[in-house]
Length: 119
Image (cartoon, rainbow, N blue to C red; front, top):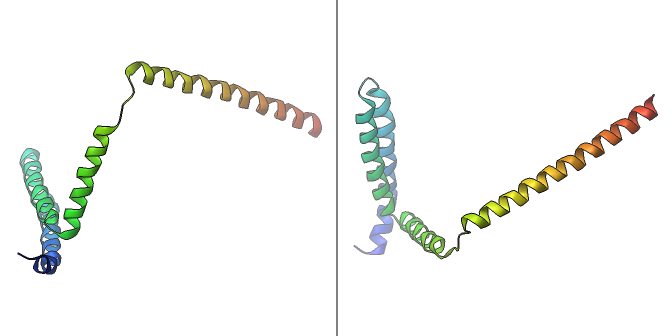
């Protein structure tokens, strides 16, 4: 199938994907008395089908490439060790505590000054 034909079918594919999602939402409320397990399985199957149909469109394919690129970039990240994370967290906690004390002292001082001026 050529790109021109695939591009012309994109609106139909999006309609099918949206229709699958709508069937899932309506079916979930219509079959509310059925077991939750069965409804969840049906919703998962419909969501996977809708996702697959949407991924066959031009925009869906571009989104899928973006997701693949993001996963590749995440693998390149050098994550901090547990010790680095703990040390950084402690620095932030101490800084926040010190700033809270400074702000409390300034608030108390200004409140005292205002009460002296007002009387």
